[in-house]
Length: 322
Image (cartoon, rainbow, N blue to C red):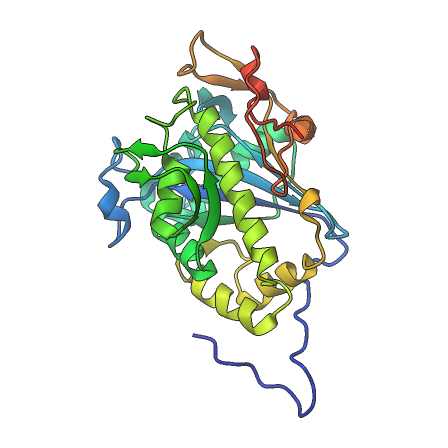
C-alpha cells in the first residue's frame, strides 16, 4: 500500500512524469473471463474451463494527450491468428478464419496471462496494422475492484433489466452502480430491453459504461488530485495484469496526469468495421483487415446522452447519434 508521498517543506507534491510524453500510445485492454479465484469462481465455469477475452478494446491516446479513441473488436470476428510463442518456448500453429477470442485462450493454455496477451496482440496487429505499445488484462475481480475504488459509476438505466446469467437485477432510472452491478451490466446479453442478444449490441452498452467511468473520474478531479490519484491506482491496479510499459504506479500516474485537461467530447468510442459471415444476429463476423483505423466513423461521446441507431447494416451499431 502506498503511503502519503513526502514533499519538501512548502512545496506541493511533484507532478508525475509521462514516460511517453510527445508520443501517441496504443494500449490493448482485454477483459478475461477467468473463473479462478475467490470472486471469479462465483460466476461458474467457462465451457472450455479455460480463459477467453470476452471484451477487447484498443485505446489510442494522441501524442498531445487531447484525444482518446477506443475501438472495440467483436469477440466473434473471424480472423487470422498468427503463430505465437508460449511460455515454454514452443510456438503455436497459425489459425485461419477462427474466432478472435481464441487468440487469448490459445495463449492462456498454460495459464500465463503474458502469453495470452501476446497472442492477442499478434492477432490485433495482423488484423489492424496498428502497433500495440502495451496491454492491460482485467478479470471479473479486477473490474469490480476498479469500480469500487472509484466509488461506483453513475448510470441512467432506461428500462429495468433482469439477466439471470449475468447476475443482473437492476431497476430503471438514475443510479450509482457498484463494482458487481457494473460488471453484470457489462456482461448482460439476455432479457435486456431493446437488445437482440448479440455481442455487437452488448459492445454498445460496454462503451456507454466505460464512457460513464471516464466522466466520473473527470468529475471527481481524479486526474488532478495527486494523492487521490495515487490512492485510486494503488487500490484499483492490485488485481490487474499489465505489460512492462504500464507495469508501475508512477508510470500509470504520469500517463493519467497527462490526460488531466482532456475534454469529454474528445473521448470517442468506435466499433471495428466488419461484415456478417452468416445470416443472423448470432452469426460470426468477418473482420476487415486494416480497417480499425477507419472505425472513427462510428463514434460515441461519453459527454452526451445517446440513443442506439438501428440500421440495416449491423456494422453501424457502434455509432451514436448526436
